[in-house]
Length: 219
Image 1 (cartoon, helix red, strand yellow):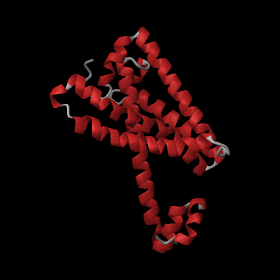
Image 2: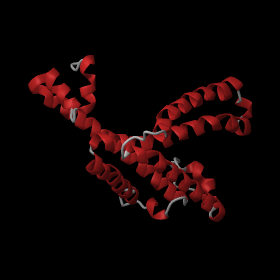
Image 3: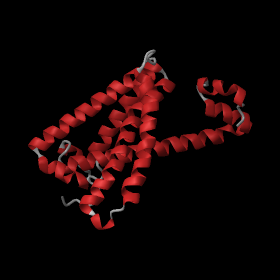
Image 4: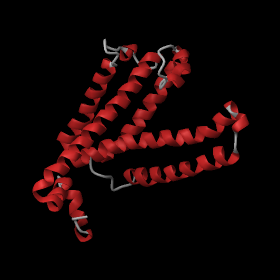
């Protein structure tokens, strides 16, 4: 809209496409669109920090991460978890942005985040039949708990294949996108090592992992 299909290639190269669209469509009132975008960006960032800090706090509370992350201030806010989240977020976004530009940095960080999330969704779908067969056998249904979970697994595997395989086949994409898959692989390996260590040294912490999202303080 207000760009043109024949000129869509310039949309990707425009450093501020939303600003350009706002000026074309709204003229002198383009600041309204800019304010709406800023409001959305701030809300999205706030939601992301809240979600990430909540998980860090909960993992610190059950012992799968340093217990310092479970600290709360006098307002019962997980201040340490929020600070850690903010520091990591700034480093992970500002440095790639300064080195490679905002567009490449966004694609880089987005790829690193998206691949693990998709893998988590796949693992969740795969776990459904096992959970219902072991824990809720009276409710077990072949259609709901085997057939239906298979559909998103296949769809998400197709997404992983289409997005990851091109990054592994020459000619390789330019940096920093070329670093995305190795970073995700290293992240996964480190996670497996941490789980193995916790399983051997503090198995009770892993046993409490089901309470990561629990609201109660009693563990």
